[in-house]
Length: 208
Image 1 (cartoon, rainbow, N blue to C red):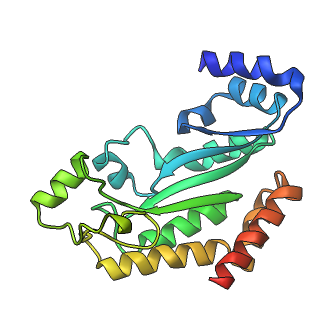
Image 2 (image 1 turned 90 degrees about the horizontal axis):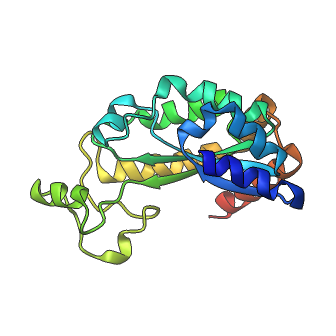
């Protein structure tokens, strides 16, 4: 974090807009957030991954604490920085209600943008090895390992079709006009550019 703070100080004189990926812990450091904002940071991508604490712990991301999410987003917004949230669906502890719970969090917190992915066990990873040993790999067509359009393993508490449907519904609902209104009204940080971006995604999902 000391390097990040020094970097913010170094680039501040150039008066450039920038965004970056950061860990959840970055959202707890007010000094970093202040320096980032002063140096031109407009958005931080935060890998929240899941609103299920059990899913996070079983994925060995227990340092992400769901109880802290709302406060972290509020702190980042307080410095005039928008939040792009990253979420993954399909963990073994995910049940069909994970999609509604995720949308509820995103709208309540006023998240400006979000990126969603389907859990994908890439070959060579411990996740792939475990699911293969359990007989849960559905295909070896590597073109389907894209985390967006296909489910390549058998989820534990829902079918692959339910996971894909839920993923598509979250994207559709998040970029619906109603959700855009609720989220950006809750936190209008960077409204002059986050609103056009949301409208663009709305158009693309409607077209799809």
